[in-house]
Image 1 (cartoon, protein in one colour):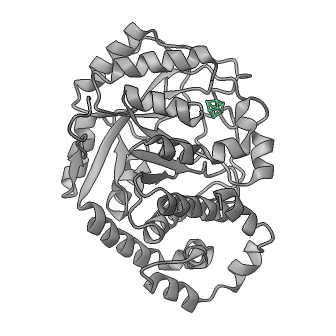
Image 2: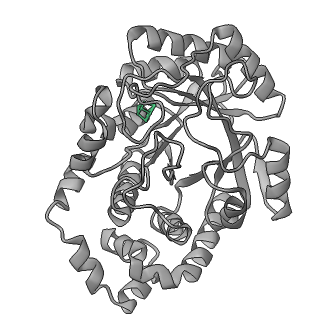
Length: 372
Ligand code: SF4
């Protein structure tokens, strides 16, 4: 059974009716379990469970400390190109948008790498728009080959591809994959992805599995909150996470909660997610999928990130730039979205340590004989 079969299983399910019928004791029973089933998860993400948010936060914090200790891993994104062949109506990189496009040369990538490496960061997230010709794949491979001289851990957030290409990239130094489904609602997915390969809902949905099969150490998923109905999106993204964790035991899975930011092509969110709902869903993910990583990006404001740091987060970005060549200012290309937390690495570490947590730059070691 693939994950789409699970989505299909809930096709006729009346979420509204079920959520209206949830009682306080249902929520308390779900919160008291050590292993929650699908309906328990729905109970604790429902609007009626918002009043239990403090209990959820405490439980989430305890589970996180049990599995991860008091640690936050750090990474930074590096945008190397913003060319894209897709038309996602919510994104500034949409191929129809008249923005300043840029693609770094290998020399410029190296300059960015040197600048970022000076901060001590070991984990890099490489991003591009989704232009996916053979030429783009070769460019990506050349970039990774170069970047692996500076970073022992490289994740990619680029165009989805077949397993054999992921295997090629793994050999060059990629050990992580980030791919967001954006929305699990197939009809909505088709409405917001107007052109390009990204229109293929199923291909994208199966991408995390192809990454796991290729042998990536970590795979990160998520839904873009604001596009679809918040409760349903949280429900299916949580189920997707559990499905992956149950089926690919050698891979570390994590989840992010990106919310649509204003700068993205003027798109207005259909169902904006409030801060309180964000915290409820984040802690629910932790309670439902204990061992999963939870990433919080600089889309979120500094104060908010600091406040939720101890409630379940395991990974945060620092010194983020969302324009191509942003770390060295080689090009004034358009940003993918506005950053809400501009702290550099030193400031992030200070903030983490001030909460008696430890900032982690590297939390793995390659098997002996593996060349890195
Ligand atoms: S979301 Fe990704 S695929 Fe869609 S337009 Fe933006 S960069 Fe391109």
